[in-house]
Length: 490
Image 1 (spheres, one colour):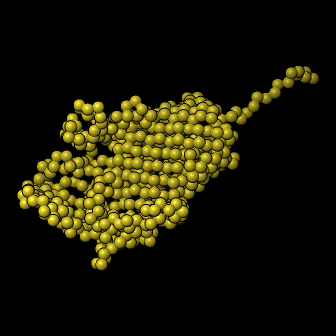
Image 2 (cartoon, rainbow, N blue to C red):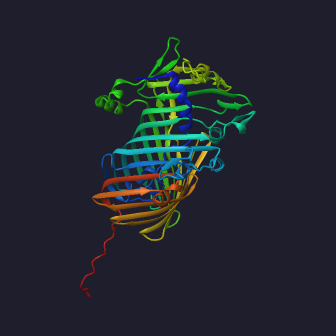
Image 3 (cartoon, rainbow, N blue to C red):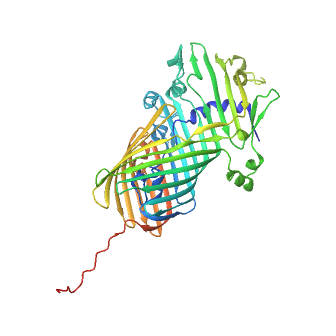
């Protein structure tokens, strides 16, 4: 099966709209202060779990899924039909949709995201004041970024951009599927201070990303024409085979037989391959300035993946195109025309741009995140927490803030949180941990409130897992001393 050049041109803008580098995978904020869950060290390797030994059950020890955007709720996209008992999208002709209200909700730069993680193998153990952990994880992240001007053109036309250019500079693409081997070490230096670090070796399975800088995609409108100027590069690394024509220009992709025919053995071999190597590091610190207060700082996912030239296809899209409308007068009453004006328009669009295929290695970053936290223990079993998450990517700052109340007991831990994230202020989260030694089950979400008002929720995440845990540090270490029944007076 082959994906041809025309298909690539027509889908190029689609990928630019729907995938971006500006947002990366997001761990659950509520997880941070649930230290009875060993996976809490993912967010700060300096934190030590409350169990001395844990073993994560393969695949199901840590299943994480997240998706969301920065502005739009579900009812902004899907709504009830005004007369029928059915649901329709905002683009349906019968939708009671106000374009101005919809556009007013958008920022100049908007995003969607989706991420998934599962641990194939994980374990950890304590040795005196040291804690060691290991994880083998599969991760998939996709980001979606688009400028407001793009939807203004789609919904209102180009009337707002006569004799000026629409700002499409935020378009981009990044979607990554990779494997992570992580080794974490934490040291409790004193009762007040602990530090930790996690070294990671990464192997990329597949990636698509773009080099799309300012002013490399312009759409300029005059009163009678629309002009498109493009100068961009899309880089891909995957098992798809790039083909070229006699001139050496990119001509499409071919799907390998083992994928098209679902050859299980070949798919497994590809999934277990160790190519496209990268490195990463996490580090953190946890400090108690006073008895009941602890503050923490961590930097997570500082690293990169280098995509080898062997499986890389770099597609350069360069050219100019002017659109002056379509003349359909000759088509009225004429059904024998071999080529319609729309076919001619697509041919003209294809011929206006040059798609060149080069195979050079390239590097993508993981998208580092910074966590700053504070926790105050009101008692041994109850504490209050605050967590700030922030990260920069492509000059864009994304932040989230979470307040939580946490209860820690043997056999039962729970947390209730409130988060401000992704332009939304109605995120009530919940975390529950049942059991302990030898079996622990946990479920955590920053957006449990979506069950009540999901139509207004802009994002959702969910984490579930099963662990074997032994040796709780919540046990009382100092036993009461025996008092003799009779006391000698001599």
